[in-house]
Length: 465
Image (cartoon, rainbow, N blue to C red; front, side, top):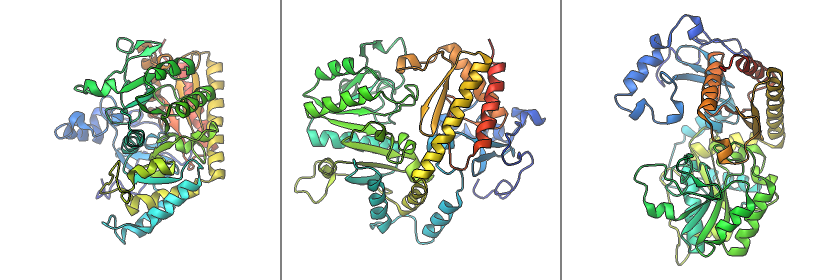
């Protein structure tokens, strides 16, 4: 919609006043089938599989289409304004169209967007990110979280000379064959609890790829170590997300992380962290919760300031498998848009503003939301709980917080309640991640959080039995 002057930067007919959750277009006399979005979706299905390029935007009966965003609000092409608690799947720290990011990127665009030359911003931003974590000695930029995880696993193999990786059951790590194993396993495919199966996501995944991925249960250090011991001479790395979304958005237990750190040290494997989502949770990433240094860390999302980005960082000797000045380069690596100055300018502008004070303020807003929602759960007497950490949280329709993927797995009844709540919030002016999760932005304040809690409580009271 870049050329659509009728939907850009103007107050549209149904935009709610700042700080208030709006009513949906359905409650304002417009049915979904009459909407501009419905017509666009019919058009989209002719050229895009399923009518979309990313499955996460799908809604029934059709996606909503964005016109523009401003601060913590996202306005669709029907003119409906919603408070955005998704922030493009946790990638936006300062909300939409942050003026400082816009100004910095506009200035860079006037100089050019990408070159077959290095740029100074690449060095400056690498230095800055490395200053936020003592585990980061060297780093490389790529173009997505998937690419960062892929590069991290390939670097681990190159450094150790070993083929296999281990990962947590159910954890999402992007599109790479090896990284995605088990992320969608179900009761009829996931195998025994003490020996999770390596389950393919995409049809046609080679069996050889599945054989090279050892799946370990989350937050079960003893069983994890037993499984790792069976492959200790073949494992290049153990891959963990310190707060995996699909495993319940619950932080890993300290004992679990410590056990994996000790095991990898003792057995010549690397401990690698996927912080594509979780680096936003603390100034130095979620790894700072545990007092351990991973050998490698992958990042993405928030470090791009709203632009596609990825990065991998860690020990200098491990990162040097990509060093083109070595006599023998173990992992040749390049990328046309890697470290492009537009992304890095946006990222550095956003991250410098996300200092210790900003992190603390945003995490305090998360606590306000979690405590408010927990109080609403208690008042309504429904079966639900809240998990999360840092600036993110997730609502489960379970009595107790899940401890692993199998406990987090939603029954048909739970999925129905999640869908109801997502629609309830959407229709009343709040956009959430499709697991009933939220990632906050610095553009929010107490008023938006309190409105969300109030709207959630009304949803809890209306939940179908």
